[in-house]
Length: 94
Image (cartoon, rainbow, N blue to C red; front, side, top):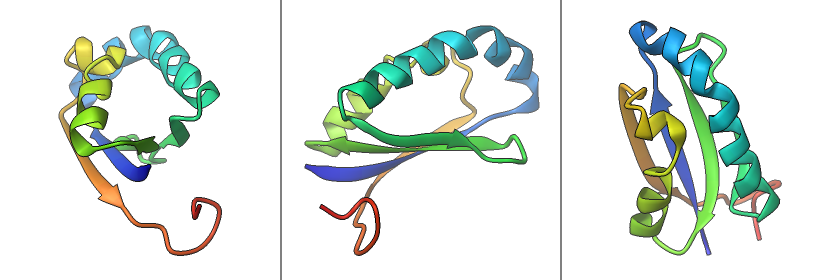
């Protein structure tokens, strides 16, 4: 399985609605952590977005999976970028 970096971009205008949907968003991510799909996740300290590292079979599979994120379903993302990432050392090398 490949590793993918999912980059979320947030806007200030959606911050109040993200706060409402954050518990559901985090529960969705935690379920993916429990099954071994999400390796790690967290927001950028400046509030501009988040990074999620994911194991997946393909870009298409990860893209389809992330359509189910409550933040995506509620149109709370300014932008989203998913790219395959090739870790060469450290915790995410298999």
